[in-house]
Image (cartoon, rainbow, N blue to C red; front, side, top):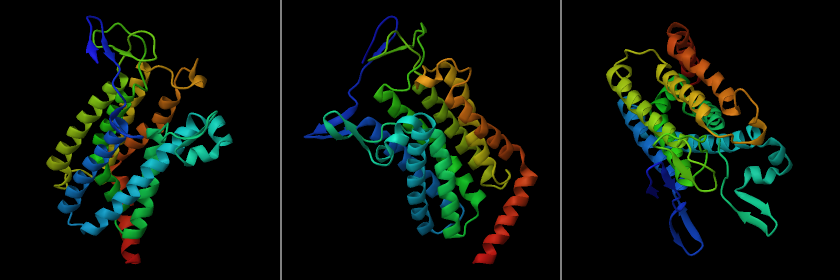
Amino acid sequence: MYSTLLAIVWNPDEALFHIGGFALRYYSLLWAIGLILAYLVVRKVYEDMKIPSEKMETLFIYAFFGILIGARLGHCLFYEPQYYLSHPIEMILPIRNTPAGWKLTGYEGLASHGGTIGIIIALWLYVRKTKLNFIDVIDYIGVATPITACCIRLGNLMNGEIVGKVTDVPWAFYFEGYEGARHPAQLYEAIAYLLFFILNIWLYNRYYRKGKLHKGFMFGVTIFTIFLFRFFVEFYKDVQVDFEHGMVLNMGQWLSIPFIILGLAFMIGGKWLDKLYNKLEIKTNKKK
């Protein structure tokens, strides 16, 4: 990595270190850091809300598998369905059939939209087991979500993937394997998500924890800000898959629109959400 007068040449080793055949990749490390930071934030929220610590440990398990499974299936089904539906084992296991035989590759392709769907489903299963209120839990997770998203995009940057379009801006990056200087779209997203995380912490401490925001607001503001930014940053990204050529909006933008609408509904639907919250609370209490 070094800087020129026109752009930054970006070609880091994808791994932090190698030990024999094992390589600790930055992407995997940053994924883990993002999950750990989210865990610490949500644990503090659980403590504030006087929720037993054992329910926090269960939450981490549900959230981890919900994100991973949802993100993997989202990429395979949204972006490369023709390939993965004819190679279903590669959709499930981190392997690929190459001319030299089966190779352990890790999960090459994770989609944030699928991860969001996956964690929502996982949290629904989690509240059925723990008898917590679903809207409370998605609010708590919402507080921490942007810091994980930030770390994941930094991992994409270290991998030199999801690159931006060719540009002549002075902060452009030269990515190995791509022609011309390009927008560092991964970095744009990482910075935005870090700012959204700071906003969430401020909203939580200043208003939500004190009961000054309606239930569901933190979840709403999180998915609204993340996917609204995602919608606009896609205009600066290179085409990710061949079928996106010629599309007015790419797949990432089309998938972002429902989340933007849902986030806005949760932000402004205070009375409706309060009624829904109370119904869920009554239903939960009957099961206890």
